[in-house]
Amino acid sequence: MKFDLFFELPLPDATHMQELRLYRELIGQCELADRLGYNAAWLVEHHFMPDYSSSSAPDLILSAIAMHTQRLRLGLGVVPLPYHHPVMVAERLATLDVLSAGRVEFGFGRGFSPLEHRCFGSDMSQSRQHAEQAYQFISQALRTGRFSPAPGYQDITDEPLVPRPVQRDGLPGWMACVSPDSFIRAAELQVDVLAGPFKPWFMTRRDIAAYRQACRQKQTDRGRVGMAIGILCLPDARQARALAREHFIWFYQKLLMVTRPVLERLYEGYADYRKAGKLAGLFEKLLDLRSLELAGMVIVGDPGHCTKRLQQLAEAGVDHVLLAVGAGVMPDEVIQESMTLIAEQVMPVVNGNRVS
Image (cartoon, rainbow, N blue to C red):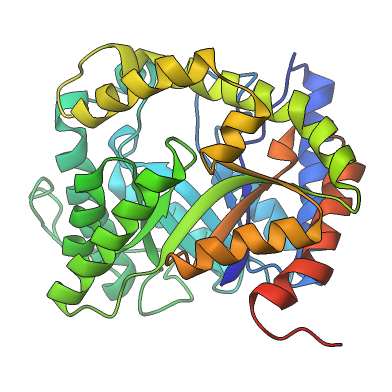
């Protein structure tokens, strides 16, 4: 199993100077991850969510990270394609791939915020179709080096992609998946999947199994599964739980708040989000660390406990675990301590190559 990092970049009571500190700490954490052997750093894209996420231009942030790292792969997790013109997405992905010498992972999705869709002139009811059409158009351009006419983009006439990406076979494609049918659709599109912390683990585990089955039926060599999860691993399990009790609850309260608009209203094409909303209402009333742990949405404890939980994810088919260490809201020194402990005492055991 690959160990990646996942950054929402939350910032309670955001101010200009705090954002400066946040980005500097992020780059420092990625420099450490590069030295420790983590596989990738993934950044989200959100707009108008100042407490929950200060990551509105993740490709710019990743370009800075690229200049401070050598091996760490750089993940867009994810680009909400209905908000952007696909030509500009392809050009910016290719530019980032050149700057990083071929380290970009391309995650895409359709976005879940009604406010974002309104701002960018996107029709939410058509967002899945638009995202899929845009992804196919972009991925073809990244492979061939040219923008060719395609469904939804018939007026584009065989123009060159400048610059060309370093990864000449195209960038690895990952699709954000929440609803069960999106996992099946990812198999049909022959892309890997990114599962987020939006619902209990028993539901995601079932979706992963369905995705694997659909990939086998398609006889595709794709089929990697990435899953984001909050984690805090410290030598003292009691200290980890004490810290997580405050910070993880804050993060999930914010997550429920930013997803509430689409959970409460029945937007066309988002019916499965409405179903999740029924769970979220109950979950919000019972929101505490124990509930999050029982739901399999966070991992908190010492290295032994964290190893056991991550091994369970690996056994269920998770190939890449995207770790939101400390949910991104704990002090930098705590996050770096946890990252180091995971790399030194958890990764080797999970992957079966522990040195005695």
